[in-house]
Image (cartoon, rainbow, N blue to C red; front, side):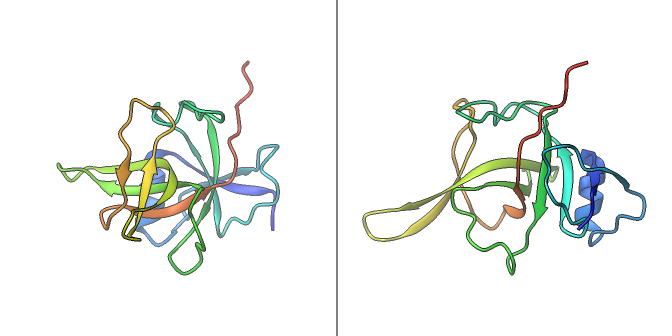
Length: 147
């Protein structure tokens, strides 16, 4: 454990994910207050972008600092009722990063589906499928001090 953490811009986040966590050109910064113990092998920081999560009891606003824990299918455990970072490609092939709450839904026949829910009600609920790749779990929302 350390008190430093990798901070990634959107561009660097994409590169980090697609180069098998190569952080050679990334910058490590002191972990902000409130992060708790961090391990640079599995934790990183990213800034929220957009307004899809700015609703509910715990809104996430544009530019909020998000400590995230990298997860894979082998170490994620249950992600139901957690907020996860998801990668997908849109119809034009553009890479998108989404932050969504994961909800489990069981229909009358016992079929299980997972829903990706934005906190802003203006955004549609999406059903998880193979086009979505979950890569991190949100640990906390850190508000940057206003200067």
